[in-house]
Length: 80
Image (cartoon, rainbow, N blue to C red; front, side, top):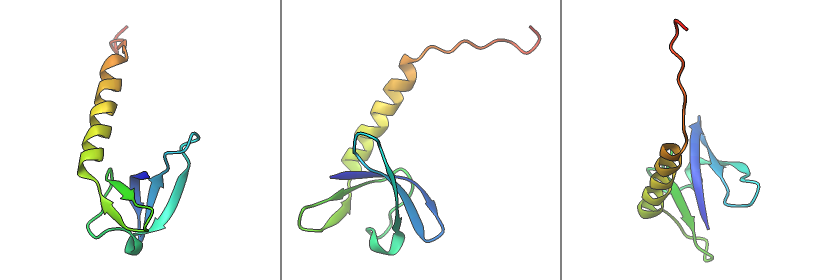
């Protein structure tokens, strides 16, 4: 299972779960892989092992970039 680190708050990381509702959980940073930071993807193995998954992070960021480019924005100048 992959979880996405949304942000860090003090000694905790707010992580998004891959469930249907996209729940957020707070995890102690001391229990996560060393060097974890915001926007990282952490892979949890059934054995209990966890690691920072750079490939999954790259895929997630590409999907976000594609989604943002697909949206159409209409900007109205300030003087109108």
